[in-house]
Image (cartoon, rainbow, N blue to C red; front, side, top):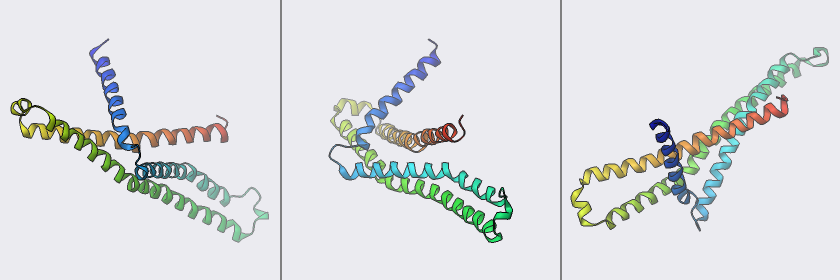
Length: 185
């Protein structure tokens, strides 16, 4: 095994360990309000991705409405009103995708801040439980900087995982389902 492969393997194991360690803070036992916020944030995530994925279908319908298969059967008003309405709906779906994403961030902010606060408090208590010898041999500023970086690292990992990786995987699954069912790919 090369050093790079070992490092990558250790990095993945470390990230998985960190995620397992932080998960109870995101889904705490007996904290119904926190769990409700997590569920609402995930529902907003699904709604945002759904709006993003179906938006092009409305645009397609609007473009198709501009050139109907049999223009003689369509009144001039319907020829214009249909595509205009679909284009407006396209814009509303785009807005809904962005709006649900912002709603997700707003709902989840309190959960994420609570989790990081709990983690920092647990770390602070652990440091206070260490022996005097440990504190004498360490630089106070260096230790606080390490704690701050650790909490910021966990914050980055949570945000990246929940707001980048999970939505990307969900959108990819939705697009794959569309390709499979609509286009028979």
